[in-house]
Image (cartoon, rainbow, N blue to C red):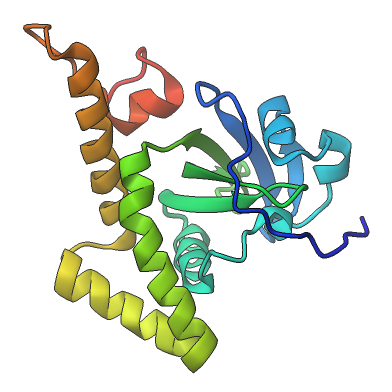
Length: 205
């Protein structure tokens, strides 16, 4: 599909944040399936999305190192979570947390990936956005390798966690704050966590 350079608009697209965006790709990141929530949110039709590289929705505010960490984990067959700012067809944005699962054939070979995306609490965006901006600034000035080295050092020295652990803990912390506000009058609040967030209450946490 031919695409033109999109004019970036600093405006969040309106979408149903109670819904889950779902897509499937092959091992190269080519979109094989997109649900209606995905299509409606990114403002492309499903027909337009299928067969395209997933980076069709990559926002220029996202540092490349974030995707490198993601792909390095997926290629190893590791489940992964990422917080991503995506770009719509009209140049707007939406923030999501993505839960990746590995799709394998009968012989255990990785054949693709399934991603489920949900809206993130504003508190998550406020904490992750400055980190991404720093990484992007380093990337533009010093190159991708310098950005990668800084990110690795940042996670070790200031966070003490892997990126995946950092994302999960940050998300759960902010989600817990929102849940606490909603259920602060209850005597026995249920801590639901990420698994419930993506798959529903019937799944174990």
